[in-house]
Image (cartoon, rainbow over all chains, first blue to last red):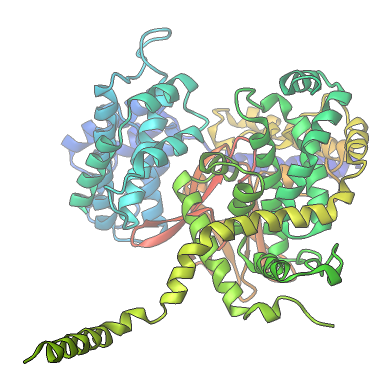
Length: 225
Length: 186
Length: 216
């Protein structure tokens, strides 16, 4: 390789890198929410929720920024935009993961769907996430609030909530019977395969989760759809 | 029986090739059988078996000693098979092989063997995702949970695929006609 | 009606009853066989696999030596997961200058490493590129992958001479939902997916990536 080729490659790499690393920070997120079209009352909650989520490492500032920007630029009704952003923010304020909501939002936009369809989907899925989170809390599975304190790492608990909610949502939305007895096994398999869940959390989940309670949440999903 | 499997694995982890050779001797037939069952081609199954042992040795540090070693090894092999099929599916098809007839003396084929041949011919035509759980179940004697682990799909899916696979197999056999088609008379 | 008459009548009516309902017997042979067959089919399958292996077991002779030879040819400290050298870029919180420098280092090291080690298992193998998506759509002008691992942003696949489109991603173990977008318009599931789920009244493909580094 001649020096010239190396320099040319460096230039190309730098250019590519500048694209890949165009990161937004919390200020950008805050400013974007401020300048958005939603009501001022909603802005407060949305900013609070997203910034808390970023602080807690639930989503990066970059993800938050591009999500809010995509919703803002989607061309749907202000009411729907507000519903989506508020739903995600409130989920974060409820100490619950939003990975699934952001994902489904992104997918809906990529599919070119009406914003009200996406809003309905996100509101429904938020319920599921909250129900799963509550169920785990009731079983004594909670997020560690400080290092070496009681509970499990946030990343692990979040992954478990997301995985279980995903299994239940997919099960019901794919037209399966919520009471067919397959939810516990499917949830455990999915979680076993998720590298984010620590082995002691997995062990705890294996012993406390019950088919009946999962079916209960699945039935709630079924009733909402 | 010589050393325990765990001891052999520990030694292999410390780059003791003799220990790894012994592991290979113990498992090569099983890994080959699984690969052959999935790929239905001798040369590809041979390549895959060899590759699986190289791969497994290099990743041995990721193997969880509490898990059944054979299941882990099958996972490595099944992944290689799947990748091979994924690539082969559209570009160059797996090397053609007149293979059902191979390895047997035609004069010795009895009626039961004819049915046997029909099963094996039908297996060739079966979809990969049906064939893979079948070979793990019936050749490698794994249970549903272990098959689910190897293939990375939920246990329920394994059961469904085994069931549907068998239905499909019967359908293919029916389509191929009765026993008289089981053997080509020269 | 005397007894004999009654007997005849009874006989006749039983026969008539059976005739009436005889249709339920249609194809019963098949149904019975189906009930009997599962066990024997299981056994047959077991034998089939064993016969096939038995007939070809000779290829396994000396395999131990061949494997060890190959293993010894490679540097002992070789990282087994070469692609794990390439972290998932969007998760890195680096500033631009650092990112640029980092990218150059990665690029150059990647180049050298590639030249030095070659393809780990012979041939232009894609194994260490992570997870490959493949689909044959010769008639398409463009095919893209969209999925939760791309934040649902389309990523262009590359077409080969046969109209087969491929694209590899570096994915952590987990469960991924995705679809193919044909000519920027139509969303299609992957015929080779591990699973399918309904999403927004359409179908998403699911791919599982196991901790062994590849899709299972």
